[in-house]
Structure formats: C-alpha cells, structure tokens
Image 1 (cartoon, rainbow, N blue to C red):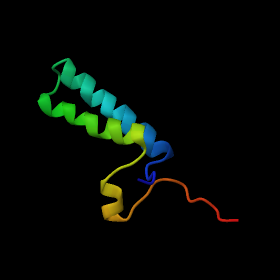
Image 2 (image 1 turned 60 degrees about the vertical axis):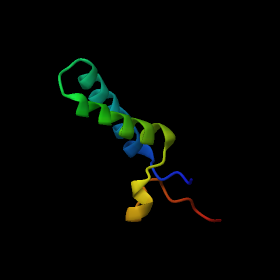
Image 3 (image 1 turned 45 degrees about the horizontal axis):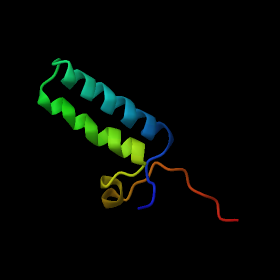
Image 4 (image 1 turned 60 degrees about the horizontal axis):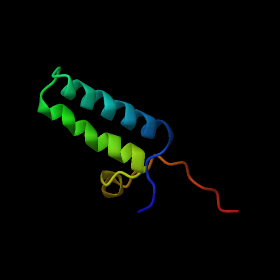
Length: 65
C-alpha cells in the first residue's frame, strides 16, 4: 500500500471527516454524517482506495537522483 494522499488533501480529509462525525453525533445531520469516518481514516492513513482505480495521487512526486 503506497501512500497516495498528501499535503492539503490529507488535511482537508481529516477536517471534513471530523466535522461530519461531530454533526452526526450532535444530531444536526442524520446518521449519514458518520460517513465522515471514511475521509478521516483515509486522511490519517494517507491512502485512498479509490485513487489507484482512478489513476490519481495527490502525493508529491519523488525525484530520482
């Protein structure tokens, strides 16, 4: 499992995940708000299972020197 989530993407996933979970826990949104666990975990792990399928990565490219 190679990291494919980096930088700003990682921060945004964690923030969005926490906000959705908090909204669901306080009853401001329905149970669907707990879907925030997905972006939270992918942000913390640094790997998104959808990115390889789409051929995408937000990690910076490493230089080979």
